[in-house]
Image (cartoon, rainbow, N blue to C red):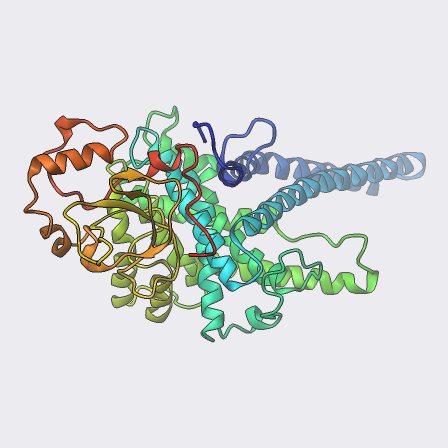
Length: 485
């Protein structure tokens, strides 16, 4: 996915994780490629087992009519077929366990990239991860929808965990299963070896539910529905009502199948003593039940626990829209949509508020244009650029951001600031302050702040946002975060 040089090691790690989930890997299939292979092979695998069972039944029936050596011969055939059946079962189970282990490994990698040693450090690392994903998108291009489709799963998973943590801290979560093994002192210990620890029992199922929420789209039936028999259709086109209804129904059906049968439960390792195997198996069943419940309820009108993944999914569908007419400035409508759905009681009002408080009105990675101030606090007659870089703003419409220009020159470093509403050119009140500036001066400012300035595209107007993708992929510009503020 990265096509530029001089990327930080962290940026490269995020890129690799995205490709591990939904890329087109040659050396090792991505998680979504594994799902596509499962859907293709599942009918064949079921048929293999059924054919062996049918043959076994035929031999058993024939054995009833025989005696002596002929009966013994048929009995040997039955035993051979049993071994063949068990071998095929074992091969299919090993494939399932491999897929599940790969998915869990990805989740642990995602946790290492987005979580720290405590709540505060985690907010910083998650902001860094989420912003990086948004800045991977150039905001335009023929393959933008395909790119956004790849970026969604990891983005949803991290947002879901931030919602979970805030709800737990606020005492909103009442789900007995979720709170059973919660220990605030061990919350950010992802490598916990205890199979019933909070990370294993709650965090991983939520991540898997979020990452694989739309994995059913990899099924051949849905690939044909979306792309046509010969790939002649645009899979990201606006679907007709009946097509959309069928797509949603099948996606849900196949997603549940994959979570339940394509991934399923972990197998007890040899390190677990025999007496604890049954307890392990029971805990795995409960985890899977919890995970399936999240996906099931997120696809219904039911309010509650499932909104931990449902609300991030709705929000992500705007931030990483796959509509062909996508425009970057529409990012600011993502939180507005969440608030509107809460008013209509489509989603929970309290959970929606928690979510918007976390992300603010302006998504991470959004490019701000603002009016700077001089040493005396007086507003200057020009504008500068900044990037939203922090979660949990004190006011939802005054985001935490990192200025990336000063005196109309791009910076490789800077100090985090809160963007006051009265100088944020997203708002008409702030833009009016610069309307009196000579249009020629505005063109000069635009020229200094553009990597690919084209005079024909500028009418000397005051911009309300800017595109930071190109800035981010210039050497040295990927260090937008610091613990010092």
